[in-house]
Length: 427
Image (cartoon, rainbow, N blue to C red; front, side, top):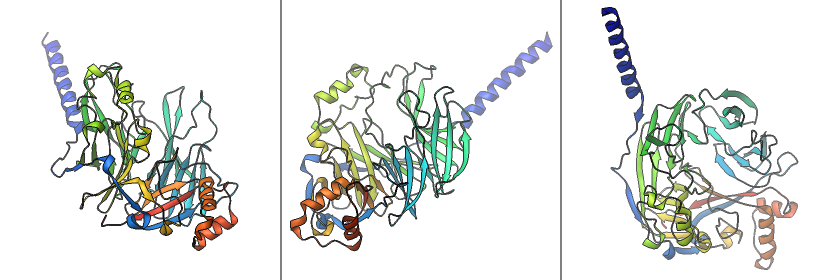
C-alpha cells in the first residue's frame, strides 16, 4: 500500500516537473511600445510631384535575356550584396542576376498541376549568413515539407525534411544563421481545442517553436476564413539583416521583429472613411459579414503592405476594395516633415527618361516591391517599357548607354526591367 502511494506521489511530482518545464521552456516575447510613433495619414490629400522633385536617382537595370534566363514576372525580389534573386511563378523558378543585370544562375522548381502542387514555389527565403536560398516543397500525401537549400550559384547544397508536422513554414524570414521568424494566420479553436494561439513563432534550426509573439484567444473566434491579406508580406526587409517589419491583417501598425525583441514602431491613424471598426476582427457580430462589409465600404483599408524604410522616409501601401483608391495606394511618408506623397501622383520627367518609375495605376503593378535599406525597387515588363519608349519618340530623350543598348538591341519579349530608386531625404 505504501509502495503504491509512493508511486502515485512520484508520478504527481513528475507531472508537476514536466508542466513546470513546459511553462519555463515556452516564452512569449512582449511588445515594446516605448518608442511607437503615431502617424496621421489622410490618403485623399496626399501630394505629388515630378520624379526629379521626389527622387535623388532613378536607375534602370535590364535583366539579361537568354534561353535559360527568360522569365515572365517579378513575383518576389530579394537583394544581397552581389545579386538580385527573383521568383517567377509563371516558370516556377528562382533566377539569380548580378547587380549589373547579367544572368548568373537558376533554380528550377519543376512542373505542377492544380491537383498536385508538390513542386509549386510560392516564395523563398534568403539566409545571408550561410549564403543560401531556401524554398519548401509540400508533399500533399504525407502533409510534410522538404526544405531545399541552394547556394547563390543555383547549386543544391542540402535538404531538410520537416521534423515535426506542426512546424509548417509558409511565411518566414531568417534573422540569424539558424533562427527564423514565422507568421501564422488567425485561426479558431476547432482543430485541437487550444484556446490561446499566436500570430508569430520563432523556430530555431527547424525545430518546433518554443518562443512566440502576438497571443490571441482563439476560442470562438470564427475568423480564419474571413481574413483578407494584401498578397505580399507580412514580413518586409528594411535594411537590417537581423530584423524585419511585420504587419497584421485588419490592423494599422508596423512592428519591428528581431531575435529577442518585438517593437511597436509605427501606428497609423486614418480618416474615419478609411478605417475599420476597432472591434472588426474579434467581434462575432461581423461573423460571415466581413467581406460584405469591405464591399459595402470600399474605402476602408483592410491591410498595410509593401512597408519599407529608407532614411527618414517610410513607404507603405494601404489596401482597400476601391480600385480608384488603389491606384494611389502606395505612399511615401517623411518622418521628419510629415509630408505625404502618393506614388500615383508622381509624374515622370527627364530624370527618369520619361519612363515608368513605380506605379499602382496599371493592373498587375504593386508600386515598390523591395528595399535594401538604401534603395527602393520596382519592376516593369519589357512590353510596357518599349511601349513607353515608342510614345516618347517626340521628346528627344537622351538615354544613358545601358538604355541605348536595351532599346537598340532588345524588344518587348525581353525580360522585365528592375528600377532602382533613391528617395530624396528632405521630402
